[in-house]
Image (cartoon, rainbow over all chains, first blue to last red):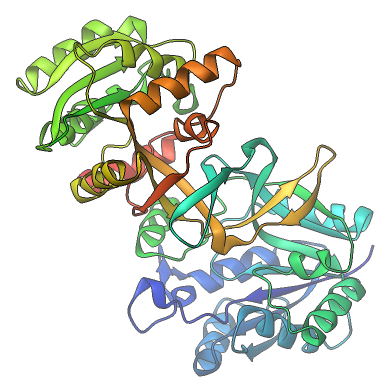
Length: 226
Length: 226
């Protein structure tokens, strides 16, 4: 079996939620979000190593709370870069030996199902690159710069993507290197890989794999964690 | 001032939530969703008449609960058609005299802000057609039929549209007639108007104007209604 490394991307300061503590450190039913998310990947057999990226000022705190959660597979806790993509790039350098497959997962998505993670790993084995997505339920329109919308997209083709996003590690490294060379910044890893001309597989996930970004998300997460 | 009619679109059976009662009839802090939504439009000065569309089997129930909520501006409670678009079409026929402006609003969006409704009315006065939208926060990708995604959309141009959607009434009638003629079914009213070549204005709303579709939405709505 190829070994799987995981980068937990938690470098964001979480300014949208307010308060001084980034949302990945807030407690959900007694356990910090980050500990829940890392714990989940600790429990997945194929995962051999986990790199955790957090804001520079919170590295010590993250190490302490992860130590408290027991040994596990965390091999490094490192400070993030100035955006998500930089943080993942830093994470890539932190593996002691390069895993065959690397998954990138948002620290603030503590509710992903292990079965979904397993499906992503399987899809990466088969196809090289895979993202979790859910079908878009809203009507999505494309707006122009002056406040009108110009067209309605065909909803049946649209996917809202989540994490984990998984890749053969050589592919992910190449994609990051190419993006750095071209000064391209994407909103996720798959958009970097896509620019290499690689087709990325979609693994259908569920709406419960929420990203805790706003205060409202946090309230929902607290209900879900009960 | 032009007079404004409102169609409250609540013809759906709400099968996604489970149970026999459509979600527009479920209580939020003691008041059924439908009564909340109608009450909100009753309170908007420019609104002169409201047509409520509900599933055929629930017309009596809707009439009773709206009567209990006090007089208000409801001029008709009618059974819906076999899809949302048909329901709105039926609603259009139910105004005693045709208003200058018609707003269409989802029965299951009880949290829209009156200020947002006022902005929609103002935009319709100026531009003929307007929808409430919020900026998309997810990364959205376009999938193909065989389980790959083919491209990532530029998120900065994307809007998730909500309701109310407002139109000069002649425009909305023309758009519905054209769609019927061409057997086009859209996911919202604006997509019918767009097919006439009319540019639709976007009014920026807020994420609290949720559509109660799933059981999870209902839990969030109950928290919000407290």
